[in-house]
Image (cartoon, rainbow, N blue to C red; front, side, top):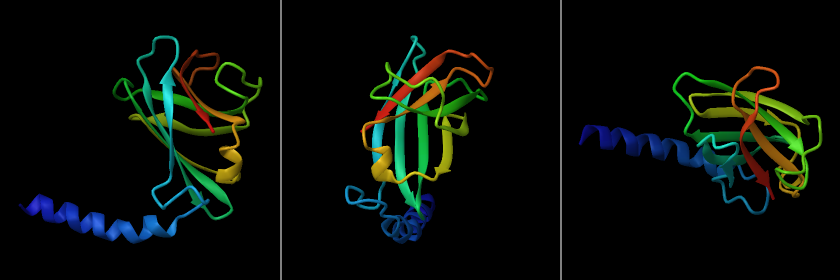
Length: 138
């Protein structure tokens, strides 16, 4: 019973903060969530969630299927989909550790959701590592 009370108290404490972080019209305070699909049979799938953060956007990535203690590179690319990426990353995001990455970028949520951006997760932090997963933001 006690863990449940702690969880409810924590949820109550966090609710006002989440409601105050409305970045764009589609966001009701819980962020805008998009899917991340596996590439190259990696088995990695997950979500990317966008939250307003001042004039920019907080990008929170959560991926399942990542080996424990594995660190992977995450990049934000321009492109119409995961198969048509520009050659250079627009932003280097925080590395994925324990399946999670959190980064704030200077782009608005509306711009990120314009259909021209993709989050790409690479299989390691090694240069030239193959992509393991990709999520198209639209």
